[in-house]
Image 1 (cartoon, rainbow, N blue to C red):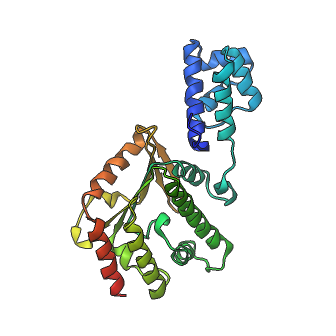
Image 2 (image 1 turned 120 degrees about the vertical axis):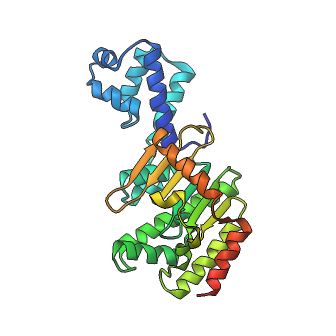
Image 3 (image 1 turned 135 degrees about the horizontal axis):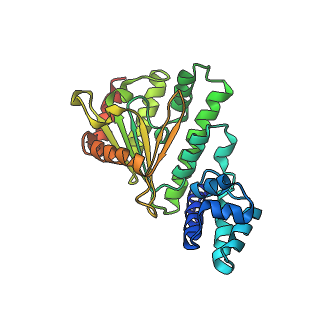
Length: 286
């Protein structure tokens, strides 16, 4: 098991392994529950990843399946990592958003389509504060506004740290032209933000795509989304949709559509040096 996995992937691996172990014993969830005197729902929730087994219950499962030695130790380690409280747990975010940030901290490709604001991983602090204040309809000195900005900057710092350590991380940021022209925070904040965006677009691990307003219809018209992909599990993309009515996290097959949309958008707009030049052109008009 790689040393660098975090709680989100550890939880997924643990639940998958528990399903495999039960199946290898020829047991149904109901039979496991009966033998251990548990409610059947407890087995189903552990195997789906909706909940983690307590250390005591995990030991009972390992005993039932006849496991010890390195295999048992590996499962106990996965359970320990999955229970770890990381920095994002202290910010009072929704459960779906916390899961998204957990998966993002381990993703090898982070893709985002944003027709409204600059993507969070590429925001300056002043822009993040102004955007959060506008969305929340609060003043910029409100603690809730600062908390949102802090989360964005912490996410940026974590990605930058992984890149500096040599981890494979790719950011694909796709924005509509209107995002570059919408003066969130005023002219000074926006000039600073566009300078930063052009600088970020020049980094080897960042791909910026700008969709000009003259483009007309394109596959992104379905709305905002972020897509996370992991090198060690390429068939399990994770899509995150953040909305005022509630955040939503989609895993596996339901997220495949967003992967296809991201790939299509990546070849639709202005990218590379052309996108960076376009950003600077708009910045010069402010």
